[in-house]
Amino acid sequence: MIEIRTCGTVDDLCDAANPIAHYLGHPRPTEAWATTWLRNFDLPRMHMAVDRRGIIGGAGAFSLEMTVPGGRTLATAGVTNVGVLPTHRRRGILRALMRAQLDDVHARDEPLAAMWPSEETIYGRYGYGLASFAMNLRIAKVYSAFRSGVDSYGDARLVDAEDSADLIQPIYDAVRTVTPGMCARSTEWWRHRVLRDPVDVEDPHPKACAVLEVDGEPKAYALYRLRSSMGEIERELEVQAQEVMAVTPDATASMWRYLLDIDWAKAVVARFLPPAHPVVLLLARPRQARPALVDGLWIRLVDVATALSRRSYSRDDVLILDVRDDFCPWNAGRWRLEAGSVTRTTATAEIALDVADLAMVYLGGFTFRELWHANLIQELRGGAVERADSLFRTDVGPWCSDNF
Ligand SMILES: CC(C)(COP(=O)(O)OP(=O)(O)OC[C@H]1O[C@@H](n2cnc3c(N)ncnc32)[C@H](O)[C@@H]1OP(=O)(O)O)[C@@H](O)C(=O)NCCC(=O)NCCS
Image (cartoon, rainbow, N blue to C red; front, side, top):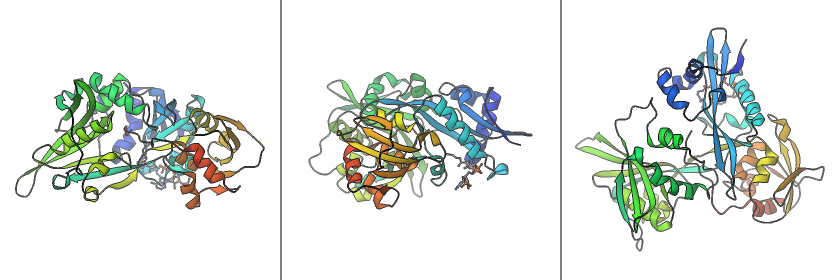
């Protein structure tokens, strides 16, 4: 008999996080890990699966605030640390953990849940959909030139990464408030999840922080590591960009120029950039950066009516959606969307779709037309897909810079 409960002690937390640690090849999380983890995490937000011998599975959620189209922020459960020990796989334990977690998220009035799944085949059945692609790049030094006419501005200076929060947070917030999918960061989040390494990561390469100033004003920053290793004939250096943010296009170009010009480095590597990141367009030879599309953030509309009514729409129109949601049936049925207000209706539906597909269009990462072409959604009234797209259109594509 397996029971799902919330963690009550630090020991519970370490045991509930142990399954995912097992898959990551890490030892059982320690009390020191838990102390740091709990600076950003509420203990009762970790669910554990318990059998007669002990804890064999876990699933946690951070309490986040995520930007949605239009600039509002929505309370969002940031799903994390999900794992079931290999001794207990495929007995429905993940399903039971997801049941308990989504019921809890609903009871907490969080309209959204979000995650970075390990495998893309698992979470669609619980209503999660890919909200946006992300892009990985490897820009070799020999191909790092910008196209002609792109100038660099300002002065970069190195600051101590651990003390940089006050300087760089306003830049982050300027980007976050206009970018759907980005999350507000508390001081503790900055300190323990962005600027410092987690206690269980022993990385000998310290984080560096470069701030770009124009006329004395910080306009961009880059958090990165220099990784050196012994190559075949000489020591080789790679710049690993962790986070690069800028408030203007000039500052974006200049901050990337700084990274690309670091001497001795053979390449700049960046993961999980927005899929249409401007650095690709700045390069004289973009194909040599081998831009690769990968999964970005996944989201779930836990409360469809609230989530839909809190984002903005690009025009006034009426749209009737018929939403399927087997896992969270309170969302299922026909919804009338008009001028940002969302109400139940018995009117004839114009588009029928699964809640996981609604998640794909919610932040603007995909269009209704793309889903219709893929045969994922049904257009029940001619022209509805086009009208839905003109309603849901966003100027800024979704992106999340926090991988939780
Ligand atoms: C993924 C994991 C949590 C699944 O746990 P589980 O208890 O075996 O899952 P369940 O038995 O509840 O299965 C639930 C459903 O998901 C499916 N599923 C589970 N893991 C899957 C996987 N890796 N790939 C594809 N489908 C999977 C099951 O087939 C089942 O499908 P059904 O509902 O249609 O019958 C577990 O295998 C694990 O810990 N994996 C390694 C760590 C990991 O990937 N964690 C997730 C991080 S985001």
